Image 1 (tube, rainbow, N blue to C red):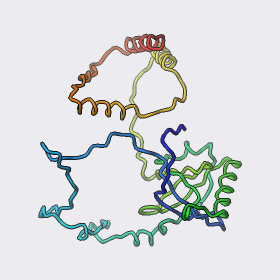
Image 2 (cartoon, one colour):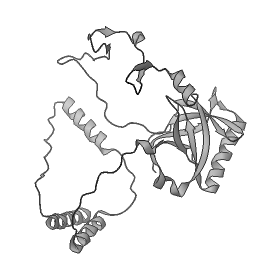
Image 3 (cartoon, rainbow, N blue to C red):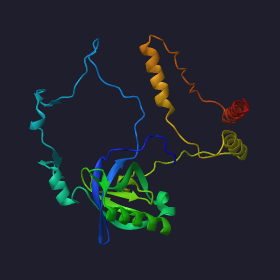
Image 4 (cartoon, rainbow, N blue to C red):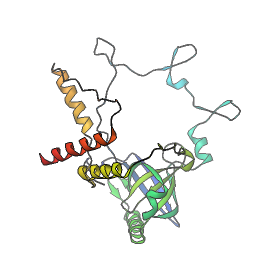
Length: 265
């Protein structure tokens, strides 16, 4: 995994990591940085930014945020108030993280679907870390690396407790639980000939197999479009791809020839 964005400077959260008889105070840093072009809303024909307001969806009256309360729906259909303290009482106190087990690193991506990226580091107080906590966290990471395992952690940062995977590099990713993963839809059914399979394999070879460093090229293209538009430069229209059905073998042969020509140039 390549990292090109700058290292995080400020923590976004904190937690106490429970490892058997040890409790390690940690800070959590956001491990990703958005690179997409941000859009804002304005009133048509003006440079007046549009704000966000809360409205009563029945009367359409604007209301103050102080008059808003969060409620959850019971299975009976009745709505009841549910605040963060009540959620914590049902699950885990905010900022408490417990290692509930260890998972072989080699089986991680076969068994779990992961989401997001955070960095767990020793907690800093006035710019300094506690030497004991720093050594304990280092011991945990070194032991996991030696045993080739990752830690399965249950942690509550914002909202209810969730499962996460913490690896030997201090990277933490949320686990998408099995009851949140949809059953797969049926795959397309059809007969593939040996000739078609050989041509498709040739196309894989023509494009190449590897692990390239990925960067977001869309954001740069959109930003360039916006910059040109701001200067009065009319961008060229994007061609609409032809979606008409075509012969599979002819398409594969044409794709292979085109890819070979691109690499040759």
